[in-house]
Image (cartoon, rainbow, N blue to C red):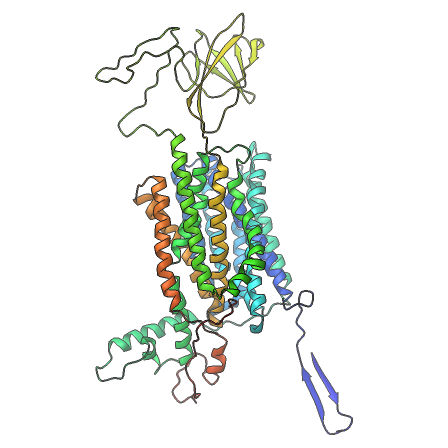
Length: 640
């Protein structure tokens, strides 16, 4: 807003003022524009996690793929979602800027969701058409969600002035809460839409995918709605290409240097004769952070097993009262932990002079302890689980219906040295009648010929449908294997004999709670701190690139899991213990690396290199007296 005022005492002079009114939240230092960004992130995460919550079931039940193919495609899609952020970061920092990149790739995101939803409609083409539409949709979703991942967080950080670093750190906490709030709600709602709503004669996958598509449309509309309030930093040209050229030139120049040439303090300084010192200093900053990222994938290797190994562990435990809790537990605990850490834990860290790298290292310890707890649970779970028959061997079970003890002799073996009492074990229902028996399960009738086996029934009909009688099966506990033998009772009744072949799981799934608590605490200290650290330690024109580098650690973490899980062939509890040990080793390495890391303020580049043109050669340019960025040890404050 420009104001022009005439000075009454100085008629020949006038005063001109120009200032900007920035909209804030309730008079605080929080820009109003971040509200649109947080809501956008909530809707986008609802869209992404809601779709993923039913994706594996969609592959198995709708596309009729086997579990191995479904799992492979699922993880391939997840990996692609974390490799594409590099593309989005390059587009944002080098070409379109963060604002337009988010909008354009969000449109691709929406189209991918729509294509995916159309592919789930049974009346649209053949099964090949469904597969093609599904794959096209998933690829577009991967490029959309991956492309905007590094841009949204960095764009939110751009809204704050440099002196409001404390508010910016709290923004990243709220930003992370919005991610998990969207994840929590979507993992509850979309499975219900799939199973409880029937369409086209079956589970409604089209609706389960359509609702996330609608939420992504809302996310796009909300983000565009705040366009008049955003602070936008213009793109700086093809930064990545310039960086690569500078690095290549420095390596080439250093390799070809003469023995008589003066040594440089840093190998990148060999590019000073062609590239600006500002660019060289920015590359040094980015490389220092990327080197610090090298050990980080191991944390994500442990963290991402919540959705795979820990879930499979839960299926072998007693799930009474909390059958689906593990799907939403992490997201729910994030919403509880973030305010606690923000209001209590982080201030305590400040009193103890614990900086960001130490917080991340502490998060690694918590994750390792979580896998220690998972190891203890696994050791106790396997005690109640019956192992399958070894390779090239078979499991033989004999059911004695002779009415008296019998002896079974197997040639060249002594499998049954003792007599077998009447009504010994065999899995399932065994029809001992001479005629068929109809078993009704959830309003579906099954004809059981003599000797045929089937599991669990509600009522049994002998002869005609009018002769049905209820069968009291008693408590069928989790993990147990039962045999029910039907035999003639008095009159037209049927006698049921129940035997427990495999004991029930006596380890309740609530014993997984400590490992989830430890992992969530580690995630809050590691992930939120790392997200803000990536932003604060990167130059203004490379923030999205460094955010993408942070996300790449997640992708490589998943690759580590695939290598260990597929190549090691270890027992599950040993594998858990191996991961915990590896993370503790990485903790030591990271702590040593972080000890030698010095924090910088990227904003100081503008002051130090005020006369340095953007990425131009310095030949002929006026140099400032100080042409190197001062790097200081971290101060007493933990707020970056």
